[in-house]
Length: 267
Image (cartoon, rainbow, N blue to C red):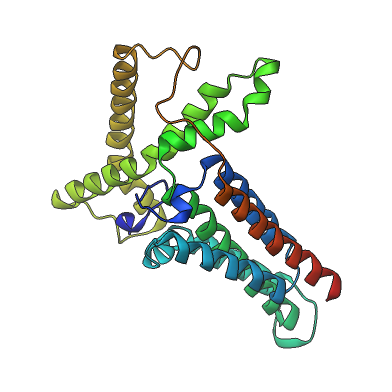
């Protein structure tokens, strides 16, 4: 299960999506999120699905990664679906047993919310799949640069966000190794009551925290040895430039967003 988590991973490539300016990719991701939350019908939501699938196909990222990005949030998806199914009581009654009521409105809302969450996770994952951590740091810093006028440490915030995102796969891999080592020593983490399973996590969490702090200390030491002093006076090997393909991607995204707005008005 842990090996299937792909959050924060970068997959190098030469597709159009990979070669887009990282600032534009962040903006396009924001447009996609707005598009999903503005969709008020299945038809409008299908526009977002087409937009997401098209971006994945253009990026040449394997489609199997879409399923891997969903696996970690399956419990959240199920919980959301159950809540909407049993607590939305609009429309015609389909089933009524004691206090359990299932209506057509509840089924529709449940399906709608599940599809929206799945699209949200898959679509936003494409940003980290196609953007290196360094490029992502530079893009976030450039987009937040106006906040420097009010003394906000933009570079430090961008660096912390990117490092946290970058170390998610590393910590997942470390967790998997610790769990395998504990199982080899006879630890049982899959049976027993909820309290027993929670107690079985203690031998995993303690070494994981120790490993995380050790990695943080090693990273800090490496940055100090390389004379890193934040964003002041820092130069970049690769400068960010907006190209015509970035404007084309922005126009296409705006067309999809306009399509969702139009569908909402007509339906």
